[in-house]
Length: 85
Image 1: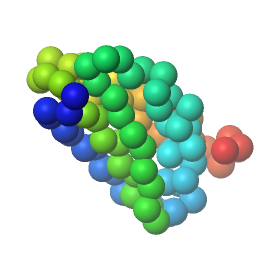
Image 2: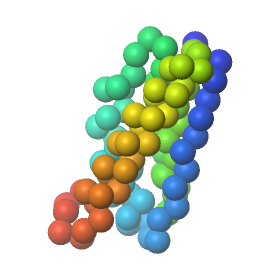
Image 3: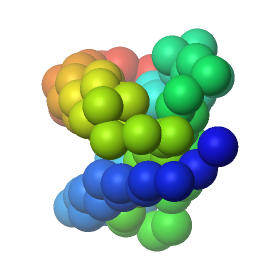
């Protein structure tokens, strides 16, 4: 299926923040996939990477847009330490 790939890579100020963002994204993995695109989330130290793989460029654009929005929401939700992740 994979003909095209895009990776969103974001570094945070601490490994804890990166862990919280990645944990917020984990439940979405597989939930927004379809037969043309899929994604995976990985974290190493203070960096979170979202890799979108797609069969065609239209699906890659749609998947990248969706995951960019999910990443933005995860950042906002985990911005405050009051949240438990």
